[in-house]
Image (cartoon, rainbow, N blue to C red; front, side, top):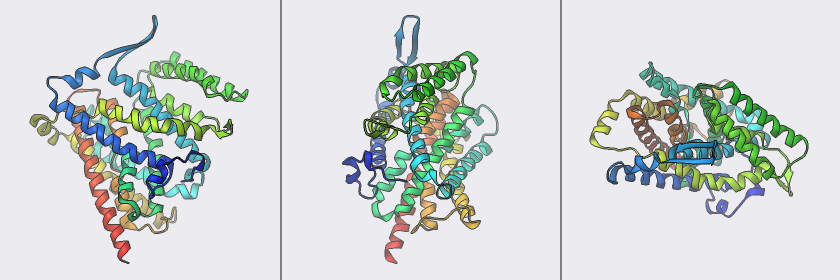
Length: 402
């Protein structure tokens, strides 16, 4: 992944094994995400009554009379604030395509194939256990990798992890983000409205026109961005896809002497990592873990499908894809990276927290299946993180003894 000196801040120097501002923010964001997840679980299980559910089901209306949208607080977080998160994801994808590892097909081939294997095999594991609807709707839950938690694990291991493996896992996670976005857009959108889709397309054309006539000030794009979000929300396509499209459409130009993409990412990335994503976890990770719910989840095929998909499917899928690609000359492992490192990184990629929770909500909406899916995500991500860290720790110590 290319270094970005134009967005370097002191955070990058506080985590020397990673160094780059993007991954440093992700690492610290992963710790914040862990903290809010714990708070959500404590809140849902310790607070009396239905305090957790009541707060997030509180309705909020935004807009003017006749032009307003009413949603509960959880939906405002999931459909509104998470659009900003996906906007930053879109910016990161575009920057990687322009100047990062995804620019070079040979360099990107191995992590891209690994990401593909790490999506297909977990989905297959889930569908093998849940072949029929409505349970089968959750097949997309175990395909995701949470880049914040993955980077946090690598940062804790420090110099025991080869730098080439860090870049490999980051590129894999970015390609995985692309795949997850496509899954959401194609398979988790329904009831499409041609009128609102037409409005979204017209707004995208307006973005192109503004860029063509040379308007670069970011404030000029705020109103069209809001219009695009509303059109996407009402069209039946999930509203967060608007954020991805806006990120991919960001101009590859300079404004006031700084690259637009780098500047936007530099400003917004800390907000999404330290506010948006933790709020999302707070709104969605609260699961009542009583004896009955744990017993139900333990026997649920949805829970088992998610856990096996994240823990076993990710490791097998990524490991097999890497082995096949290297065997047939389709890619080359980075210097200093061995098979044990790949296994550890594949296990860490099984931390599918944020986007997995997001897709779980799209899959099941609510009820027992959603609870089972959330328990599976929490359990599978925890097991994957611990297993991956132990394997990488073992691999790192073996390398030091040589």
